[in-house]
View (cartoon, rainbow, N blue to C red):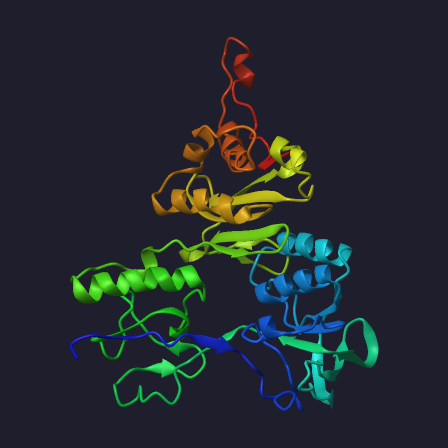
Length: 370
């Protein structure tokens, strides 16, 4: 062949250091939707996107759901957003245990051929209890991330460098770093977003670069991500949150940021729709500029709202440009515009006809739009 593409995807990660787990009839997102009965009790190992989406869904169906957190929810995301989502799920009956270390999984009863669910017991230590406890459940959902499908494929013979769990190492053109005639896309690639739309965009990159001598770079992609809880949680940009919940290092060179926040409790569409009053839009810009480097949205239809910010970032539209773009009324998207209005207002200067010379410049307004 002249060119080849590796697109073998990924699979749910299953830890190998928990006694009894591999022998237990656990569930992953691949098999969860094959359940024939609603489990009375569900234990979810993990606190990321899949864990929280399924926790809320099965709690709404009537299952008694417990989420086991090793670290905080959405550990790489906005802590304020994580707390809003967590409180919503708690209000809906989901239980959370934090600082969890699973000691053992015991299979009490296997599933039967007539559709009866299995029964398992999870022994664990956690922050909420001084002594180890056990939780019985009919469904143990593993939601601990994904691992690449790259082993036992003979990639070594093809001269393709890879990590056994992270995946194939590629350059900015999605070529194997060790064999440029081989490309890779999707969940089998190291250090890329493991999202369906990311895989689709990588496929476009590879077609253009491999077949039409393109120079389309992965680093040029602006990739939003959405968690489909209610409210939804959407993000875009390279945002990092430190231990004190300060947004830092959203882009290279550890540049500082300004944060503009609009809360939806005063948004007329959210009021009409009875949306959660704790929802918000938070946009981060390079400090002292309108250059958008990241955004977090917690809201109904956050996945629709984030696309406007992604477009602005992709085409270097400033936050001022977003604020001066007319938004239809009443819409949730007006809250994105609200962040832009804050940016504009923070740079207002007074007119000498209205104020004395000594007060010609007003202090900058708060970057939180209420």
